[in-house]
Amino acid sequence: MPTLTKGVALRGIIAYGSYLPYYRLQKGAITAALGTGGGRGTRSVASYDEDATSMAVEAARAAMATSDVSPAGVTFATATPPYLDKTNATVIHAALNLPSHVFAGDVAGAPRSVNAALRSALDSSRPALVVASDVRSGRPGSSDEANLGDAAVGWLIGSDDDGPIIAEWVGGASATAEFLDRWRQPGWNYSRVWEERFGEHAYLPLVTEAATAAFKQCQLEPTDVDAVIIAGLHARAVRGAARAAGVDGAKVVDDLTEAVGNTGSPHAGLVLASVLDRAEPGQTIMVVHLADGCDVGFVRTTDAISSYSPKITVADQIDAGNDGLDYNTFITWRGFLEREPPRRPDPEPPAAPPSFRSEDWKYAFIGSRDRSTGAVHLPPQRVSVKGGAVDDMEPIPMADVPATVVTFTIDRLAYSLSPPVIAVVIDFDGGGRFQCQLTDADPDDVKIGDRVTMTFRRLLTANGVHNYFWKARPARD
Image 1 (cartoon, one colour):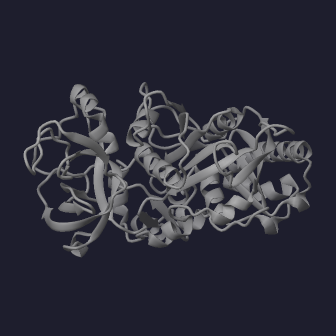
Image 2 (tube, helix red, strand yellow):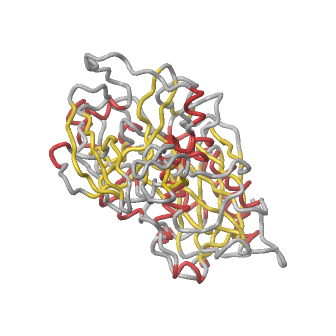
Image 3 (tube, helix red, strand yellow):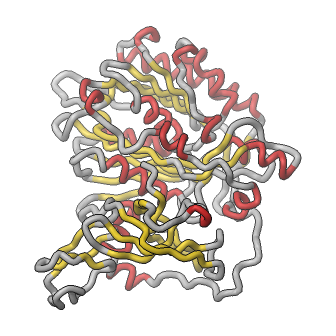
């Protein structure tokens, strides 16, 4: 990992954003359904209309909302990419409405990929957006099913020349080894794991090696550390990592697994976000990540953390979660239970040419506004609904504009993996009316006057093509 030297601009975190899906599965529901598995607590669950890319968009939006810095590149790290042979990060790029000269690329395949993305961003001289997201599944009844979770996190990395650094990068070290711990072939719905004692035997010496080198390189002592984050999918090795790293176990922060599960690629970043949500200036935070080796890094909060406000904290997202998801719905969303579909024609995949022509609307949710009357059109139009002006429009981003439900209907016949479909007509603050689906909501609770915000979702997948677009959701942040 890179190390800062005298005369070099500080580099670190300018902004961050986290995203936890709305739904939670109580682990006890697994035991009730299968007679095995489960445990205490809950795990976060991506909805039927979410995947790693859509959650990454939400985390990236949260990070970008708290800073005016524009990234020179977007890197998406995930072990569960919705597409192979197609770049997933370009969807994030389009949803953020970034200019075409901004690079977008994936670093995918394993949880350690996020460390590669962060190393590249920290080594760069330009601001970079790094996003990590996973949708983690396990075989029904397995410990993975109960103990994993879904989430996303985003970091805007830059130097103090770009904007205020809220957590400077101090340095770190890595230790790598080739051994078989967790693996998944393309096409598998879940990972396989080797015997736990072997993984612990392989990981802990690497933790000691990486931590020793990191302390030496950064000229720090274990007593200098204020908080320790330990993350990794090998639970037994994670439990022994504090002693192997030579740090006080009392300084290890809550890893959130009892509330949301282990979220894989973004998990260390998710825990770091929860620490930064309540951090004070001058705190040194140690991050230990176990994934096909061990990566240890140190960040130190600056005075700028005092005036920084995340779009929404991790704690608030945990508190806002709905833990009433039933097990049969969960395994249906995961594809382990194939239910009888609605008696309707199968959905058609979106065609490439019209999607390309309407990229600003489809991905960035940009409407048009009449320059003379101010009328907002969704989708964008050439002819104004007020006055009839032709081709006198300006683009207007609408993804971050709140709205109000003016009418709705519950459609129990429309094709959906999770019926019924809630269709709403919403009026945006400042103008603009739009009909769309409402997600993350109970049909019995919807009413006229509800406040909603827009969220990026996967409407459907047909013939291997994901159809991404925007839905409304109840305003909770």
